[in-house]
Length: 233
Image: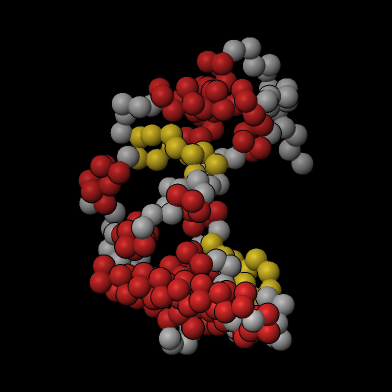
């Protein structure tokens, strides 16, 4: 069993920045503040770590690589304007997602948590189990609970990985729906027109929900017939 090496005491912010820079450059995934704190024997406050990260971020301001904070933590990444050049170095093409996959992901992202039945109600067609499996294997969605109705269908929501892949810190930073496909896969198979259809369907569903809530306020018995209560798959 390997014993962790003793780490020297950090005496100043510059020294801490150098260590964090090395760790972030070596990491293959974003690092959270908790993971960074584990590198040191001494107790470092989150405030001190944030100060070091903010300064490190400024140090890289004029370089082709930037330090950013995403949902899963902090990471170094190449700036967007470099992507066109770097893409020419890759032999593999970026993944292409079908219209059905992106429509399903969009509905989950903007209406979460939802069941497969909710997605089917909005899309107007059945959702193939393989679509959900594809999104789960990509690490973009997960089951976060079950709706308390007969059959207890799974409630689906997006993951921190999904936000990190978009370069976002929280759901509040989600872009307009029509930008989602290009952010996830520049070579996506879905068209802006198709995403616009999803946007219109989501907007129509919101109107339906609003009307149902108004009706429920006037007639308490109507609550049992709202789409949320009726969805069971």
